[in-house]
Image (cartoon, rainbow, N blue to C red):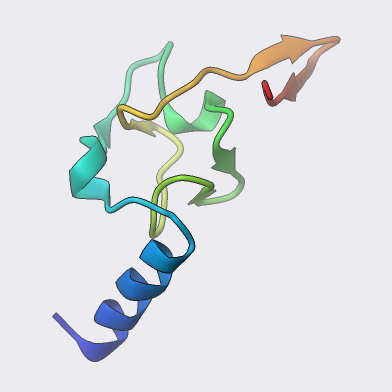
Amino acid sequence: MSERSEYLKARARQDGKRAKESVNYSKGSPAAHCGVCKHFTPPNACEKVEGHIVPSYWCRLFEKSRLISGALTRRR
């Protein structure tokens, strides 16, 4: 692993983010994927998981956002 990769992983952990491997980050389903998760930050980030996030993927921290008046909002 490169020095840069190690640095980014250490920084993510400091920010409280989890490694993809620890949350079963994998292909999602039409109903459950990062693009509709409350933790997803477009275009390719997550509040909970480190690294580049693919909107069509999923992890076990998934929590579906809700749709209000045609706009996707986050549950808090």
